Image 1: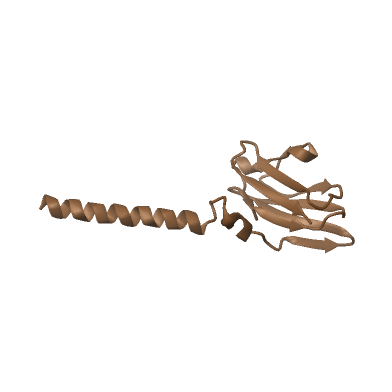
Image 2 (image 1 turned 135 degrees about the vertical axis):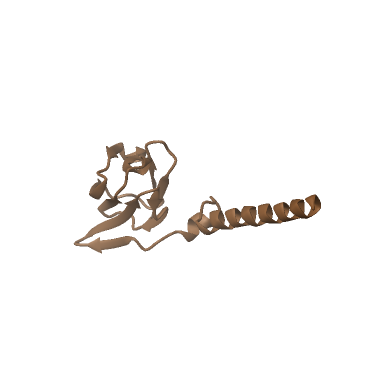
Length: 135
């Protein structure tokens, strides 16, 4: 009877571990090809300005954005009931740091960036981030 219990326990443990691995891979928490696959169409151009929309709650989404170089840009950060560390945003290369409202939109003006420039946004603790690549 103990041999049967041990075998069942091993099978259950294997299923749980396999499920956890599949969950992590499906949600793109790897830093390899998964990050590139998350590139999203969250960029629009309105009246000659490029608007990049980033959602902040439990991290930033999308994690990777490709934007046009050499044009005025606004990063629009949307919060909806955001009370985690992603509510404090920092963009070091712009010298920008701000606590976001729990719900609403925050507009960040970005001067035109040269092709090949990468902006990285971080939460206050550095746990969550997003990247904007200018081409």
